[in-house]
Amino acid sequence: MIRFDKVTKKYNGTPVVSDFSLEIEEGEFFVLIGPSGSGKTTTLKMINQLIELTKGTILIDGKRISDYNLQELRWNIGYVLQQIALFPNMTVEENIVIVPEMKKWSKEDMHNRVTELLESVNLDPEQYRDRKVSELSGGEQQRIGVIRALAADPEVILMDEPFSALDPITRSHLQQDVVTLQHKLKKTVVFVTHDMQEAINLGDRICVMNEGKIEQVGTAEEILKRPANDFVREFLQTGLPHYQEEKTVQHLLDHEFYTTETTVFTASVDASTTIDDLILTLSKHPSVKVTDTADQEKIITRDQLVQYLASNLSDTKEVSV
Image (cartoon, rainbow, N blue to C red; front, side):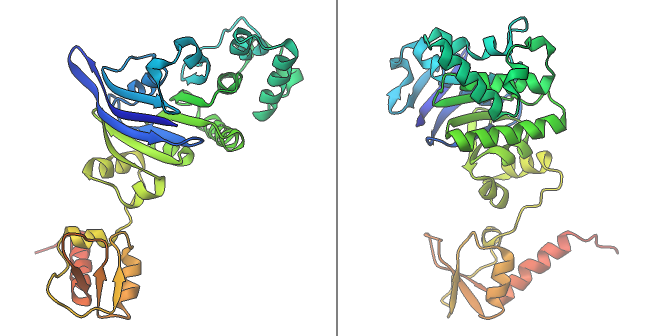
């Protein structure tokens, strides 16, 4: 659906996004996350050409974004900002139908669309359609911002930290509303946040960025269980105070608790197998082969598992003399 091919953006010769390549699938809720200055908002804004890339290619449905008519490109990409950017002196309905009016929808179609969208976020159409936006709460305004982005039925929705200014309860409710809408409408959503818990709550897949580069792409489960590097691990620990990485066979391999000598084995595991499952396997077998190590055959024995567990135990205790 959306493909980045070696995309770079520079300001005054300094790259803020570097050699960025990935694909976002049709109907996917894709989250860009990272610390301030990581390039996530720049990446988002390059999709609808609010920011022009320096080099590389972005394609939507196989067509370069530079080959689209700019107005049509933006009409077909919904956009939701943290600042909401609604017109305060216009009614809710007038705000929602801005793009449908530009696209020459009939009054009946626009009226029906407003009814449908208000109902989708649990706002009574008869109560809200004629109210001024300035009369609404922050949470209500942000709901209007979300459904306005959906009004002309675009295939892609871009969302740039849309809930970060809201209180936790309102934020949680809106997250649930957005997930429900996305599952119902099957839109492709690209969502920027700096909040790891929000990314986990919302994303089908998550892209962790740092200094304009991709550190890891995967599902929440993949990233939580198998952080790609120290940056991702530390980012998780900072963003999720109670985060504890689930240890896997890979940890034994990383710390060289294995042998490459010819050894009889009667069972196999892979590098992503959890330590708990490894313990169960080695309770029944004296040694196991790790199947997904292409460089050389690696065997883990019971003794090596015990040594690994002992080393972890000693790391968590203070040694008194």
